[in-house]
Each structure stands twice: as structure tokens, then as C-alpha cells.
Image (cartoon, rainbow, N blue to C red; front, side, top):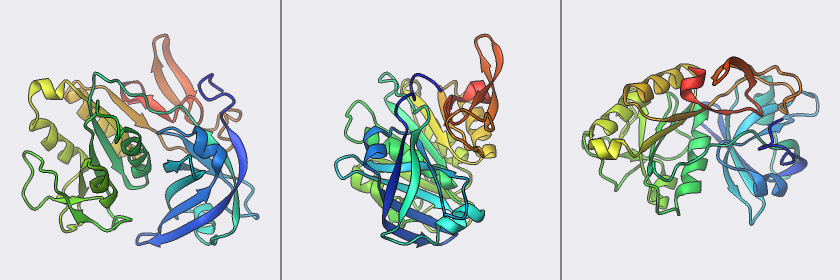
Length: 289
């Protein structure tokens, strides 16, 4: 385990405060987990035991925290046996979780225009970053969220104008609008108000609308499906921008012991196999793609 994540992982019984289902087998789960809420940072995840009959835990990214209330919020999609079982859990029940786990994102104050790109269940870490930065006047984030199923929130028109975008591309996440953060949504499903195309197409449109000096203030942060992250990494190279990505991998222990989630990473000393759970999940995009 890395020094950065040592002594920050707790095992706690988290009470389910709310558990809401959305189209596309998506769920937003709010838990009372004060130890995790106090330590979590953007990029952190938890390892949850979804049901008593399933001893193997599942990793889920943290979307929001409320340290004062001791709460964390997760967004997940029911795909396999574990997450389908999790979707059946009721308000008032308790879940065993380990967290917060992982190396978080880092922020450079000289790169004051963070470009946050989240796809599908990769949206939560981007929401967490936006929440983390919303009161820091040094940063002016722009958030791009993409999904091929209906978004797990009611899309609403944005009051933030974006240069270069068609006037009908105005859909945003209500939470971002409440926070005063510019945001646009992308999909290939023709959802009203959303950009018709990939998240990287929308990102390129936004980047092309910036001056050279403004582009030099951009750093990209991203989480989502592997092909999307590859495309985001290529976009970062194309515009010569720093880029951090949060990887999603199957894992067993989630604390660095089993080495079941290793990926190849280019280090200063050559290629090495590193663990997504504790060496990541956040990596420099150029080192993993």
C-alpha cells in the first residue's frame, strides 16, 4: 500500500439513508459512513459487501461526501450478480464497506481550467471533483458527462453559454447549475438538449473555442469505460495537455494484497505493473495509454 493511502482505510457498517432507482438499471445510494466521509477525496472509492450471500465485495466510486453529516453518495449500475443484489437493499439496512481507498486526483493551481470528462458510471468522480472545486475561485471547471442510457437526473437547460456550441446544446446536470459550474451532456441517443456525439467530440469543440493562452490553462480529468479513456488520452496528446484518468478494474481485496487489478504503467524506470486499487485508481494518462 502506498504511503498516501496508508492508515486511511476504514471498515464500517454503513446505514442506507436513501436508495433511488433510475432508468438503465442505475441507482444512487446515500450512506451514513462517517469515517469514510471524513477521509474521502475526489477519486476515492469504497469496497462494498452487496449481500450476505456474496462474500466478495464490489468497488464503487464515491460521487459526493458530506463530512459534517457523515454521509457519502454513490452512483452505480446493476450489471452483475453483486450490483443487482445491491440494488435490492432497502433504506435502513446496513452495508459493510471498506473505504476510502485509492490515490486521489491532484490539482495544479496553474491549470485553472479543469476539463472534467465522465462517461456512464465514470460520472461520479467528476461530480466529486466539481464539488471539491466549486468554492475555489482559482478554478473554472467545465464538466462533460456522457451516457448512452438516460441520465440519472432530470436534464435541465443551462444558463452558461459555451462558445462554439449549437444553441440547442443546452442540457446540463441540475447539480452543476446549482453550483454555478458550466456543464454539457453528450450522447448518441438523441436526447433533447444533449450534444449528439462522443464526449471527446464535445471536448474538442470546447477546446477549439478557447484562445491559446486559455488552452494552456487546461488540465483534463476523466473516468469512464476503457475505450473512452483511450480516446480522452489521445485528445490530451493532440492538444498537448496534462491528463489524469481514473481506471475501473475488477478487484478482489482492494487493498493491494492480491495484485488482481494490476495494469502496465510506464514509469521513469521503465514499464511496471501497478495495482489500480492503491497505486491508483488515478494515473497519468500518458503512462497507462
